[in-house]
Image: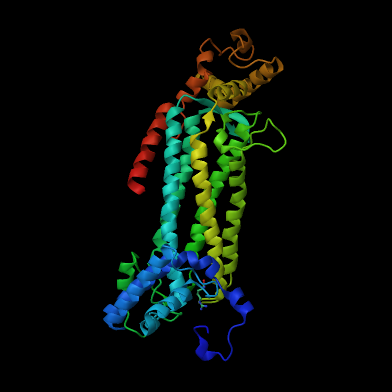
Length: 459
Ligand code: ARG
């Protein structure tokens, strides 16, 4: 018999129950559900809404259920409609009539909103922890590559010289924002919906501040309709997770390219790559490809939740049950990707010499040659044009800027002197870019210091 048996003359059709049921996926909320119920029962007892001894019995029963679930003594019942029903039914089975008092001044609508907030709060801590680990690995690598010159790209064409540390620190900025975005979402999420009940609050004299404090919320939500029907926090977190995946997918794409023989900027560790079933020579960057692929899946989760919420009338609608699988999937995948990417990244070998060779070939010091002429008094546009002709000449003659003779330079402008060679030296070109945010080793070192402070203060 289902719990609402009073109103119904027939038992539920099995197909309806199976269709309606969420226990197969919301069982993972068991801990949050039980802790939420413990706080609710405590408050009911303290406020005199149920007798203190019944409150105590309920709490003891709930704690026992939690322990039995965690030790494997108790299994979830596949026929239960959801985790909330399962726990309540189990409690009543164990402690009898007192169990039936737990749901006083509460509804599954505020209960599920509560559980999901509690669950996501815990999960966000895990994701932030992983992002922090990732940033630490990036800093460790950045610390080794202040002088590793590589081509910086625009349009995937060699553009200007940077260093590998500078490149790593670009991703660190992204991951820093990812942490801040998640923390920001928690600020709005950390509001207690308990006490909204089904939609219209309750006539019982409950203490919503007490449950808020017991569960670590900043304050109770201020509108019961919103309390049970708000899923903004799920959407905000799903979008923060999508952005994390986008960042991981961008570096994954670069790693796929860089591990190819065409680039050969990195060598992936054997433990983090795979072979081919037919081509003996192959070493494939499967992890990074899979991360790139999973990015689409997490975007899909975000779009599912957004679409599910679109045009839903207030307050709770059963459609909202669909939020869980999507956000669980997004969280699981982000955690899995970070968990795998971190050691893969840490074990990668960066092939400095190949990066340098690529830097030498791409005329990435052409802007520096133009800047040289500007410093000798030419307007930038003129200098740009002259160096353009020098580059075209060098390409035609299969030369690079550093091996053109001074006579050759002088054919294009009398302003070129012997010191041009210092100006177009890649190391100098990088070192002189010491503007805030630039690739000069000193600038990058200062950036790393700032990130270390961020990690110490924010995480
Ligand atoms: N399993 C439901 C969900 O995830 C719990 C809330 C059910 N409320 C209701 N009125 N049917 O959304």
